[in-house]
Each structure stands twice: as structure tokens, then as C-alpha cells.
Length: 105
Image (cartoon, rainbow, N blue to C red):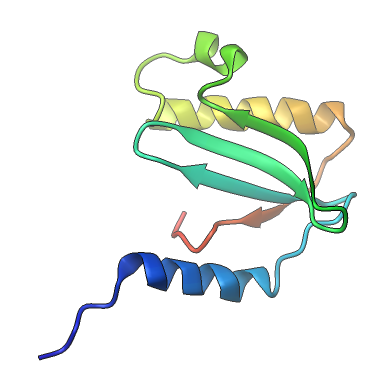
């Protein structure tokens, strides 16, 4: 009988494979998105210095007040996307590299 592959191990393997190709620079940072069952988090990362340039999540007060319904829903993702876009434009960032973290988005 065949053993089912562990989903977490498979996702981490895909993420490592993706990260070989994806690298965030100061002028084009990496947009990392994490989605839990209740919340959505996004951050812009400069991999040359190893710092986060901007971040947004459904836990931010600014996002919470514009949110209607469940924070882990499509409306929550839209609110986080708009917030991270505003913060990126404020720092002069217009292009990003999307890091899907091994997930299928």
C-alpha cells in the first residue's frame, strides 16, 4: 500500500524550490502572503538586507475598520491587498515579485 505524502512537507519542498528563483530587491521586493484560517498577512521583503519594507494584515486597525465580515474571507484579502498597495506606493514601490509560499493562489 502506498503512503500518502505529507501535505506540509510537500508545500515546504515546493516553497524551497520557488525561493531558488524568487529574490526580492530594494526596487522590486518580494511580496510574501500568508493565509491562516482566520487572518491574512502580507509583507514586502528586501532579501538583500533581510528586512521587511511594508506589512499589512487583517489584524491592523486600519484594515479592521474597512473590513466587513470574516477577516479570512475574500473581503479580508481585498482589504489587505489595498492596504499593502497603499503602503508600497508611499515608499515608492511600484513592482513586486509574488512569493506564493508553495501554495496555489
